[in-house]
Each structure stands twice: as structure tokens, then as C-alpha cells.
Length: 170
Image (cartoon, rainbow, N blue to C red; front, side, top):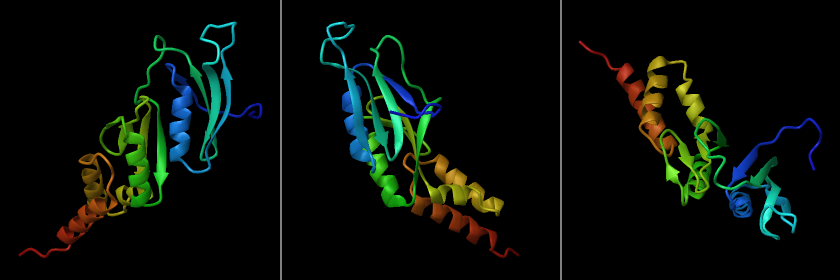
């Protein structure tokens, strides 16, 4: 149970909260499925089916409800950002979260439950914030052409911009 005043995301699922909680907790470290409240004879769902519950992803508590398909759908207006230390982490989260979902651009994807995620290597922020405007622009252009962010490709674009800027023309 959470402390009064704390904030946690609450997600609306059609009917697959338990499946989603298991899916997400298998991907992220320090994760677990918490309490799942089930419908009783009082309804409105079938007795024994999950009504609502909690799960923790890498220490962050999420709440969920099986509210049915008639009320809510997810959009990119709200997404979850996964900060990654390196390409191996990007590959892990991208591959796992996009499985059964759909890839978008610039490190964005929708998982099989329709949630939007941004899988972002720390190196991206460093490169697009480079004090050299040509290097920052090269990193940004490279990112805009990617689906999954590939650090080596970003660095190659930045290196090419650096080399172009040091050429002597006559």
C-alpha cells in the first residue's frame, strides 16, 4: 500500500491487467506484481477475474484497472521514458517492449497493450546537447532518421560533422 500523498501512474486495461503486469515485470529489474483485487459475486465482472491491482517496475509503483474497451485508449500524449546507460540496455528494452507492438520513430514505440514508450540512451542527450552546434545538429538529424536509437550511428554522424568542420578549403 502506498503512502498518502504519493503519486503513481494508473493504467486502464481492457481486460488484461494481469497479463500486462506479468509482461512488464519480466522486462524490468527490481519489479514485481503486487496485490490483485478480483471480482466477486457482486460484479460487475466475472467472479475471479482481475478487477484492479498494483505492480512495481524498477521500484516505481503502477496501479491498473480492467475497465473494458469502451472508455479509454492510450495515445503518445503520455508515454514512459526508459533511460538507458548503453546500447545493450537500449536493445534489451526496445526488443522486449516492441515485441507484439509497433515501432515508431526517434526511440518511440507502442507495446502490445498500446502504451507508448521512449527508449533513450544517455548518450543521445549528450550528443544533441553538444556545445558545437554542428555536432548537435548532426546528432539530431541522425536521431530523426532512426526508429530504435543506435548510439554508434549517432556518434558516427557527429564524428562526420566534426571532420567536415575541420576541413580546410581553398
